Length: 541
Image (cartoon, rainbow, N blue to C red; front, side):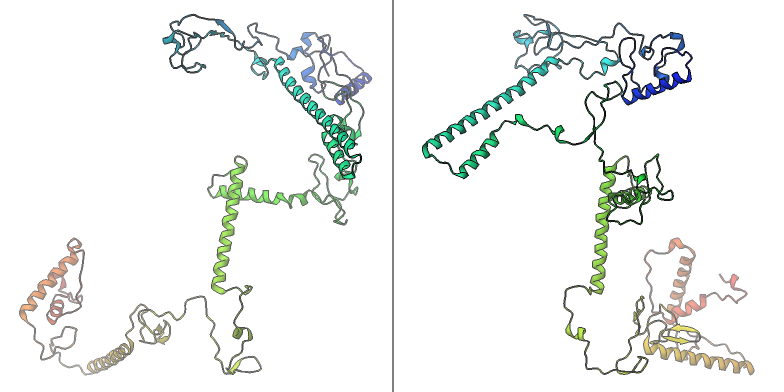
C-alpha cells in the first residue's frame, strides 16, 4: 500500500507486491509499519497512503495526511473540578449576595438559598472557585472522556467485589447450617427417609455457588477457521467462529440449468422460482417474488399506496418523513372503511332481509300452500286463476299529484299525453274531474258551432252591426246595467295599475290579487286595452 519510492519494479516484483497487499487486507500478513512504529491500515487507498514525490519519503508513512501545523495554544487538559483558590473572612463588594464568593453572582449561585445572605450576615463566606479557560483543539472538543478520572472506576469494582464476597459468605453459612441440621437428624433418628434425602439434595443444588458455570463458548460446536494475525485492518489472536449453517445452499446453486431462474449477482436476487417443478413441501426457497407478494410485504405496499393517494388528494402525509403518522392514518382509514361497509350491509339487510339469518320463516311462506286455484298451459303461462303481477321498474309508480286520480300518460288524444281522470294535457295542471271534462266538451262544441257559424257568415255576409260586448267578450245581454260612477273609479284604478307596470319602483312589495272582477272593472280594462291591430294605437296614450 504505502510505498517508500516510485522506483521501477519488474513484473514479478509487482505481482509479489499485490499478493502481499491482499494478504495484509485478509489479515494473513502483518500490517506495514511507519517511521514511528505505528501500523498502517491496509484498507487505506493508495492515493491516500502514497506520499508526494517532493517530500522524498524514504520509508512508508502517513505523516503527509496528518495536520503538520500545530497551534501551541491548544491543550487537552481539563478543568480542576472543585478547586478553591481563596477563603475570605468578610463580605466583599461585588460578591455573591447569597454565599459571598467573588466568582459568581446570586443568580448563578449553586448553594442553598439562605434565609439571610452573606451580604447581610457577613458570616460563613464561601471560598472562591478556580476559574479556568481552555482553548481546545479539534480532538479535545470531541473527546467524550476528556476530564474523566479513571481511578474513580475502582470504586465500582470494589462495590461489586464486596457484594460477591458477601454472597459467597452467606451461601457458605447456609451450607454449614444445613449440614449441622442433617447431622443432628441422623443422630436423633438414625435413619433418613428417601423423601428427606431428595429434599436435602435439592437444597444443596440451590445453595451451590455459581463458580462452576459451564463456558458457553465450549458448548457451541461451530466450525473454526485459521488463526488470523491481529492487525489494524481487523482480525484477532483468538479463533474465529463461522456462524453460517453448513446445510445452507446458495440460491444460484439450487438449479444449475442455464435456462433456469436468473440470478443477479449485483443485488444477489433471484426473483423467479429456481425449482418450479419440485414438490412445494420440500422446497425452502420459492424466489424473491414469493416473499414480495406474501406476508407483511403486501401490507407495506398497501400502506405506501394509501400514502400516495392521500397525498394526491391534499392530505399532508409522507411515508418516509412521518411513517408513524402514515401508519396511524392508514389504520383509521381501514376502521372507517369497515364501519361504512358494515353500515351499507346492515342497510341492505334491513331493506331486503337476510336469507341466511337464523330467524324462522312463516310456515305458510315455507310450504307455499293456499286455497287459490291456478291453471297453467304447457308453456307455463297462467290461463285461469291468479292474475300475473306486472313487473315494477326502479322509478316511482302510481304517484298521483295535484289531486289527480290517474298518472300522467294515462290518456292520449290528438298526439298529446294527458290525465285520464280529467283529460287535461298540461302536466302541472290541477285536476278538475268530470266537471272539467264536461266543460272541455262544451268548449269544443261551442268552438265547432262558432266555426260553422263563421263559415256560414263568410258565405253570406250580413251587414255589420255594432254590438256591445260583455266583460268576457260575449254579447252584452239586454239586462246588463253598468254604473257610471263605478266605471269612473275602475278607469282610475286601471290607469294607476298601468303606471305601476311602466315604473317598477312604484310597485309595492306585497301584492294582493283579487279574483272577483266586476262588470265595471272588466269594461274599464276593455276600454283601456291596446289594440295591436289599430293603426291609431300610438296616438291614444
